[in-house]
Image (cartoon, rainbow over all chains, first blue to last red; front, top):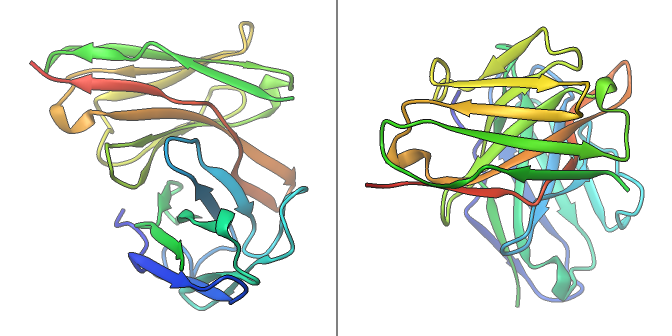
Length: 110
Length: 123
């Protein structure tokens, strides 16, 4: 159950777009479309941003989008805003009927 | 609004046990698989365990299998995590989370989280 691999940090200027990758294996990201993304601000509980690879829950800005190709899922934030500065985690179901988080990415708005 | 409220955290010595609770409200608890997730200080999120909606099936991360046990009391809308043989590396904020299940093919994500309860394992 190794954690999915994410870049430690990604940064961008306000208004820019950034993409966070989440690389797994044939036993998790590559096996199912049960990939979700969470945003976590300091000292807060995580918040669901994307589920089932590319679906946005009600109330989540359309600036957030998700995709997947092979063993890598991606979260794109368009029109970066100051409030997007947070930690982001991907999450996937696995063939062992367990689940695994990504290593986490710190997004900084310059 | 869905509410999940964890309790039971605190300071415990290595080797001892602790039981966490998570009381759910404002949704049909018996319909939802439930999970526990933890986050060590300044570290990432770690999935720990899931229990099916009827409590008959559980799965665990390797890091806690054999030491932690998840259970639920659907009559009291409460989720539990029994933690035995605690180690310093179990120090973390522990979250309960509801698994979203929007359709037969849409599941395996967390649509609601509790606020977390801190467990500190230290002598």
